[in-house]
Length: 147
Image 1 (cartoon, rainbow, N blue to C red):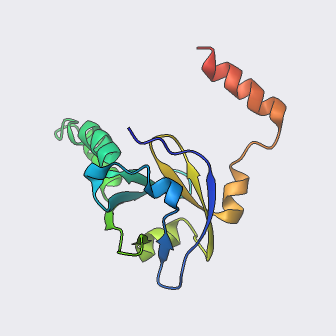
Image 2: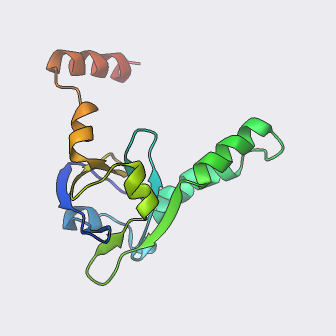
């Protein structure tokens, strides 16, 4: 299992390329080669998975009964948001323009390790999704870690 943590400030060039930070790249399993899977997040960000981690999610979604209209709708909306991306020889990934637009990514982006995945955020929007009150963070942790 990949274990991604921390925040990383990165730059997106005019072509939509970004160098994957070494601390993230080193945690990609060798079996993924130099390929990652990027998808649109539920929030306005992109989500990067190693191929190994993506296959776990893929299996769950693909195994849903295709004759159930609700499952088909979930599958259609899930799979249309996914792109397999090869890292180039410089360790850069080229993000699709439609995904850059979806996440409102600009020159400065922030990558956030989320355990089995990495989120890619517009720096300004990312701040809107953080908890800036330690008491609220503590309450949320207590609520969900004491279950």
